[in-house]
Image 1 (spheres, rainbow, N blue to C red):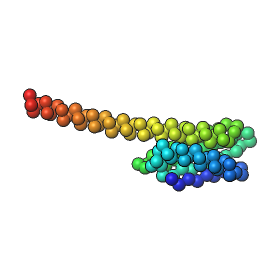
Image 2 (tube, rainbow, N blue to C red):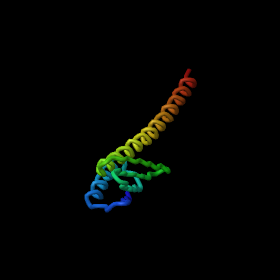
Image 3 (cartoon, one colour):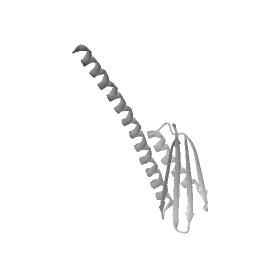
Length: 117
């Protein structure tokens, strides 16, 4: 997965970069098909903003933002929100496929019952 981390109105330290990358690695282990992740860290007075944009196959784009007084907490919150969205999208796709398989199996059983009975 390609990653880019950008800092606006702030100096991007190695510890912030390492924290964000370690959180993205955990996310990538659960969702291995992710293609690109972009994290934008912004400081406005006392507001610490983190924005995460993740791109996945099939035109799936997840955008999550979080704002706290601590940049580490903002990064964690934004990645948690993105993870929740990715999990919801994945579950929806899996459920949809299982429903269509169940419908096909029901149709086959109905045809077999009509043919035998």
